[in-house]
Image 1 (cartoon, rainbow, N blue to C red):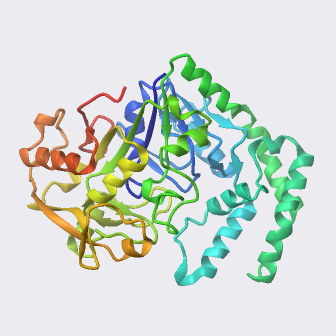
Image 2: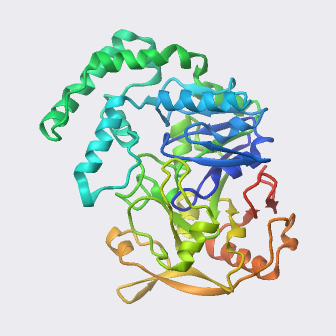
Length: 427
């Protein structure tokens, strides 16, 4: 019953797509269990680069069944566009499964997201404006539209009208926007129904049966631990649970079925959007990390904020996810620095703090306490084993492993599928 959870151990954008793709040849199912098209993965296969936003990375592995679980919110237009783009490039997408219980991102969810963010002004959260938060809010408020509702026009009409009763009041009276017609929304949503019908399934049943049959199932989180709605840097977070516990609720499997939890760590730290970021750099080093690392959001197109590695948040990720392993990515980006600072603790009001403060106020005022490690200048992209790395690169990895609280079982030394050093097998 080999079920693995693979998730981001920082603020997202750690390279989860590469890690998922690495395992794809040995995995029977890859499951997205939360988020929507506000997450993005870049996967490089040979000389081909694929940018995935909603689809699980396993869709690029021929023997793998990709699954969009019940915890995901689905924009049908984005889904169909992404499938079409892959089909045009010769990728077989016919195995995709979508949970009938996944919630639909409607046109009015997108509208509410955009106008709300503009209304907040300087207090904005930094959302992607794709309707993710409002869709999850509808889900919790029990006025959401699920995939299965597309196949009952009467139910769909009733649910859309109920949702718009309150939203149109807000749009017209608070935001001075035009009311949205329920009939137009229903017509648009019904237009997607038959196009996605071949993919819709009872994914909870399928996944649990697969595990009983000793199939390998990989649960893939979007975003990262510090963006978790409960355990992240609230309110500058996403609207779902990318932490390990979210895999159980977002895919419908019990926690006793999870065998390993793999955290993806970048060899430095990045963040997109607003919110505190203790190790953020505003100098030439930060710009160099951004340029060399290609730090631009796959989905957002926004430049990522860059900083040195933060061992405090790595330890936190280990704790809240129960991590068994780390996959360290983008080690090659650090080639060329004579010395590399690593944040080992924070200073808050003159006191040294070695664990993530639970208070958002304290975290906002946290100043990084650095230790400096010697760097390396040798090209590491052709390294095939840990011993192939320069001594200082080896020491850097060992130091991060010791500080973070879980073994580093794989290292990314380049963007390509084959540019990975596997120290311990994840399976």
